[in-house]
Picture 1 (cartoon, rainbow, N blue to C red):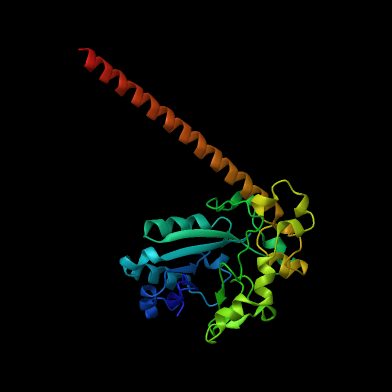
Picture 2: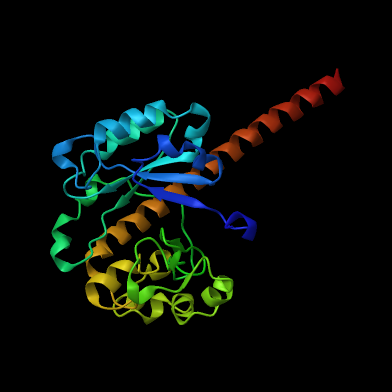
Length: 269
């Protein structure tokens, strides 16, 4: 149904029934399996048999592995574990990504990792002032078909429609919740609107201020330093890329100059 509507279908799963339902991977565009650690002592996911999931991954048909990405949520407990998962993923034909632990309440803020121990996503940078595309760039569909803004905002108060409803798309498109996300801007967030890098940050994930500070448009204090570090490293990456590009241009120019001199000499001879 999702594919018939021209959308990308991504499955988020803990992978415990992966081998029993391997054919699902032929249908979806990609699957993200949550895996933070291979150590039982640091595993915080209930009902997850780490040895079984590791063996199941190794038994998965190799032709399907390129559809599977292992994702580690990096918390204080697992901040030293994700490199092991990353190495396992790359050595066995899986993709890998990591995400910073997002606290759901003030008590969980203490579980955030040291910023020096996280694997930052440097692949995306924009100038929109809003990184959050919940409800209109992406949606999360629960197992009963209920549509929510995103996977981090599965909350009864944010239930939009049901994918099994004939009018699900119009209900999604015209929803007050969807329009709230469309109209979010970093310029309406206290403290963020005074920040020099606000358009490169966008205020970060809106699930954190919603869950901790009481609103989608609240300042996400506990994530601010992470966001600043991500922006800094992204800008460094862009500058490094430009520098490398300039070097390539100079090398190309020198080659063309030498080629031109050879042609001149050949003509004179």
